[in-house]
Length: 313
Ligand code: HEM
Image (cartoon, rainbow, N blue to C red; front, side):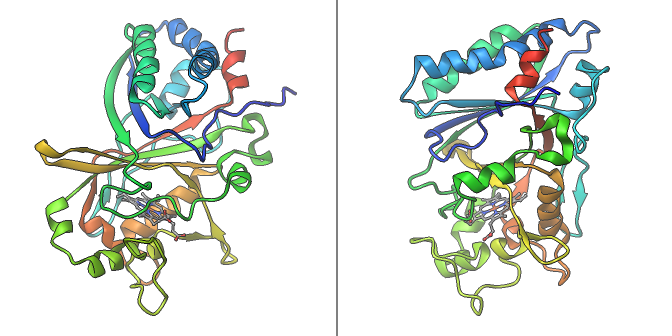
């Protein structure tokens, strides 16, 4: 058995100030050898960039969608939970499902470094793929969402994050891989800014300025940090690793959050989404959705570098 030793660097507590999120579709062409070569060489590309820019907090990871997996690897097994994301339709709001074959999450302190890798990827894949979406995220002050609240506080610490983000013995062939779910949200900033700070705090469940969690007697049942929590059958809390970033084009009136969650099991992320969009047992839909509309939603699998390099054979 080939034990994978090198997961892609999805866990990064020092992730750079900037990020590029790129989703591509694969052209319908029976010969996918160009893409396979690219995938097999991806770790070398990442290594080269990290060597060129050692102090830039550069990292990049690559995810493969369910449809692409079937297309590219008809003779290989598939990660147990890799399927196209199915939309979640609640009584008020819908988590839409959108297409995507390859996903790139590129992070660095300077956007120029993110751009450098994106442009190499484009050169190598332009004949075999087409663009679906590209979003430029930036770190907003002390890691805030564009809504003004610190985002990522309850993320697991580095060592625990490994347990949470990487597939374990439950799917031995894909040990060290990760499920990444992405959703691009647009915020209604006018509605949001019309709320008082106290009211905004009740939507998120934390204080705005200092990020302190609201006490249970003040926190409403439909606050985001109440509704989004997932638990197993024994009541233990289940976690994922979030690496959201804000994006904004103020003059065009477009501001949002690029939600990105890595997990060892997509089911955990899915439970969080169901809680948010369908409501928990008590029927509370996430109030954050009154100000946030997802315009995309796709699931990808991030295999280890070992898996990708083996494709060269
Ligand atoms: C509109 C997009 C979103 C925004 C702006 C947002 C923002 C936030 C903020 C500000 C917090 C509080 C600080 C923290 O613990 O990180 C938070 C917590 C959290 N969010 Fe989100 N979030 C979004 C979407 C999502 C989605 C789609 C999920 C799950 C699929 C999710 C899962 C969570 C979880 C699990 C927590 C921690 C709850 C806790 O344990 O206290 N979020 N989010």
